Image 1 (cartoon, rainbow, N blue to C red):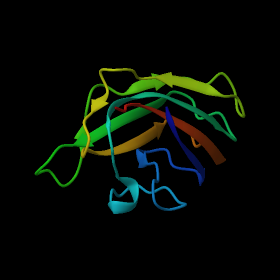
Image 2: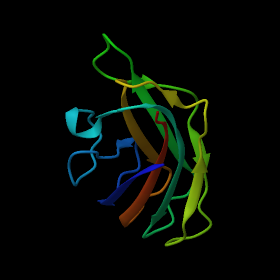
Image 3: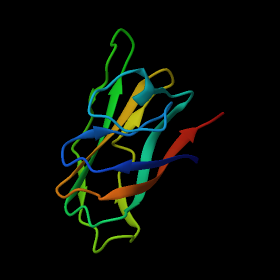
Image 4: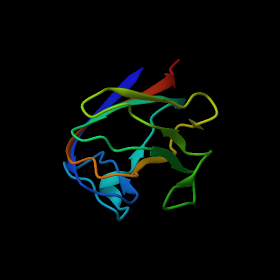
Length: 130
């Protein structure tokens, strides 16, 4: 697996993008929030925790194939409800959230309540290498 770590400070209560090439999150998708996949594979899971209880939280996987600039939602959002603040929560995705080599992917988060500051994410991708 490949693990992409994201550590941000957020108070958004609307959909925002997880960064790949910067240190801050935003509600506007641009090149800093997209990444090209080097192999075929899929998004396996996202483990996260927040400084304050974010409540029901939707995590979305987006992808763009060739001839498409910006990714669009691929599959349904995975919604989880952390039990408390500063508690790790896992959103399981799996093979139906797949991509092929060269696809652009992006990830968004939409929390019901303000995460209240620090948020930590471990995004786990599984690649088919070989």
